[in-house]
Length: 87
Length: 416
Ligand SMILES: Cc1cc2nc3c(=O)[nH]c(=O)nc-3n(C[C@H](O)[C@H](O)[C@H](O)COP(=O)(O)OP(=O)(O)OC[C@H]3O[C@@H](n4cnc5c(N)ncnc54)[C@H](O)[C@@H]3O)c2cc1C
Ligand SMILES: [Zn+2]
Image (cartoon, rainbow over all chains, first blue to last red; front, side):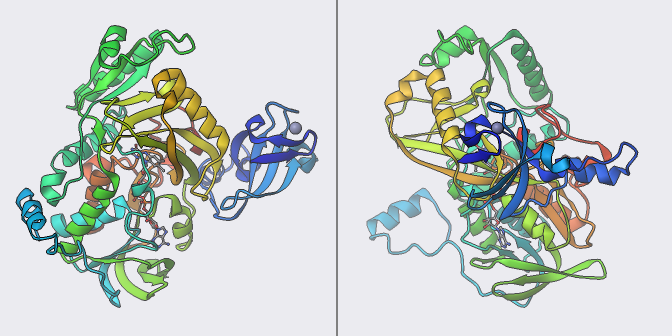
């Protein structure tokens, strides 16, 4: 498996560290209800098919990446910089 | 038909013409008292104990493929009771006791082999943690022996005791740990359930869960609608999809775990060896193949096949620990879809939908749990109450903070 980092180009999977689902981008406010925190930390859609999740380009540019990929075929359709997405 | 040594002998004399299929192949009925979704180890053992312990026999197991085609036939067959946390400890202890009587109970040879499991440690700190774990195991009534370096060397002389990356300080021996024949466990429970009247329905995928006024009324399947007042979701890596049919979002992510087997060799590894620091474990099957594996590929997947970096990592770890296996040729590798929870512990509980129950979150260790999980899930479905040894496997423990993080690795699905 290879990922195409927007900054570094096409790179080996071993350069990246997986974190988890896109849910981690939507951190609730500190005073949000417990259920929101449960959803953020624990509950997952866990799709068989298209998903979006967070990878860290550890051995490259050290950027967080939002990767669109298919959990059944392992095909990767899009890689975005989290930093640019938020801006 | 009862199986026995005499039966094998006499069948051999008469050309093995008397064997019959081990279970029926019934068409689904329109209604059952209870249905279990998923014909893996846990679904089959649930059905077996519902019939045996609770007298519920008008029930069906609905399996989308064939019985035992999921993780129950893909795992590396380690059976152990070396847990530390209250909640896990009594559950796996109960399971191991059921394993010890399983063959007699099922009249089926599951080839349960208590060959001893050794968890290696590589530092003073790790030794202290393992000593503490061993004491917890003994307090639970199970067995544990702390081995020093010489003790390990006596049992496992072929390990590389000179390597300096993870020098071997000793190991925690769990003498009653071991392995079993994975398919046979599925088949034995299937046959036992069938003989008590349970319908095992294969090629029957559940595609919807019917709910009326907050109560489950049945399921939709590829072989028609089936009514039932009680439904158990026991689908391991597919738990997310099946729960979504009931409008639920589970604390589960599905990840891929790979395993490997070599060509058959003469007996060379007599125990199960776990090299946690290197993410590697190994045993030798009765057929002679070295069966080994490592960690998750770490990203969510439903592919049932893994990627090469983890293959390389596992091979490296194996060579670090025991260079003698370097010449063995790997025959096959495969992957299974693991239902990972944020604390690494399972769920056996009711759901917010009345009559709908869930048994999932087995992570990479659900094979050894097959007997106790079925026992406790059957208890829950029959009585509406959690069994004493599964009381802490609640669905909402993540919300309330009652996590069971055995490894202390934190609230992230792929870290357990
Ligand atoms: C490589 C590997 C190594 C492992 N090693 C060990 C080990 O050494 N020790 C240990 O204790 N555990 C181990 N495990 C874990 C263990 O195998 C699993 O935790 C356990 O088998 C899961 O429960 P199960 O047997 O019920 O799952 P499965 O056998 O996967 O059963 C689930 C069933 O549900 C069916 N299903 C899914 N969706 C539907 C639907 N919609 N309708 C109908 N049916 C459906 C599936 O087809 C499947 O047959 C390992 C797993 C893997 C992959
Ligand atoms: Zn990069």
